[in-house]
Length: 230
Image 1: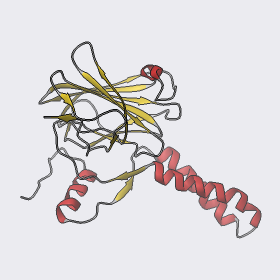
Image 2 (image 1 turned 120 degrees about the vertical axis):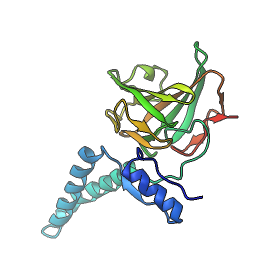
Image 3 (image 1 turned 135 degrees about the vertical axis):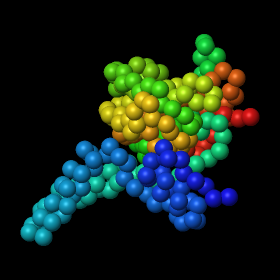
């Protein structure tokens, strides 16, 4: 059966859906919100490389600049994904750091994202974004227990399972969280919703009665890995 994109699905996500439907290999793009880091780095690499034609001494600057530029390409890659199945899917690439029962009956699944992971986060369920709140805080490493008080963005989604909370947490290196959508936006499951630059953490709170389908130490893929189980 052909798949039809929702009118609320982003243009990039529609392209991915079309590529998947047609059997083509999905393309990899650069994440939105990466420009402040990405453009200056590539510009420096290009200029210093060009100057090596005048003097080989410029290679001392060109080599590390090109290496950093290549690193930025890797850090800010944004591959298309064939969205997985399940009521709740992972919003982040990374490793399950902890699974904690919450006093209100919910279960928090914390996913640690290293600098080598894709940094684009995706909607864990289809629904409507009811709030996007930026909360100032510190910048301790995301794997530290005190990272709960870090700079973060708290999301709430109105879904078929009720209110779903998701928290993007900045780490020691990640100092900027870039939301892609605003409150009131309808999103599809697996749709891109934001970016955390470099390493960080993303917490998803499963509602009471929803069983966890992952375990601590398990690798996750944003938009693909199922977090719950039947």
